[in-house]
Image (cartoon, rainbow, N blue to C red):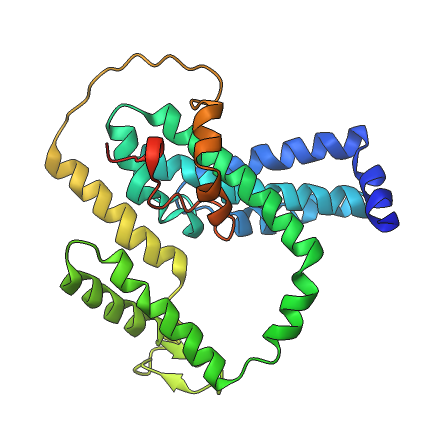
Length: 271
């Protein structure tokens, strides 16, 4: 507790607060633009921190990363294109809600979910991360198999409406993930002698090809369907009653800050 209080006293200084706000603003820009990620933003702005004190530089980079991760929901909501890899699931519900004339409400829900997820993740990192780390290093083949089996079982939930399409997409994902060196034994797999494939298929180009190009082609095929809307923006677009009515949904989302998946009640986005 003494270390925590001392750290908070070092952070809440005028210079650090200004750098934190600047980092969030820059991170939001990197997260909003599809193809730019928070990792890329941190890599570009690391030289900027060389002249800063350690607390100032680390606070700036952390806030840049948080802004970049949260900023991905803007492009996902308004364009249907994930701004960052962590905001892929946001396109499934937020973009239809924006097309139905509620973009401000969708962005408000996304910001609130990101805030709650960030706070809960910080609490988990500060409290139970040592326990989780000790458990993680003891995982063996059986635990890895159970973890992968659980991840694959989610296909049954995600493939609502067409199980064949879901299973096909799952096999395609497995095939893409097996390209390159194996993470366990370093065995070269499915590279076909191509040097560029030895490092695997990068996630960012894959996302841009699957989501951005598909969305752009869909918009071109649909033609010009512009319509003007008058939005009355008040607050963050949602009411406190809605926030407390979906408190358990927000708690369930803290593992993935921008995953606004399958809200129930007043936040049912496809209504």
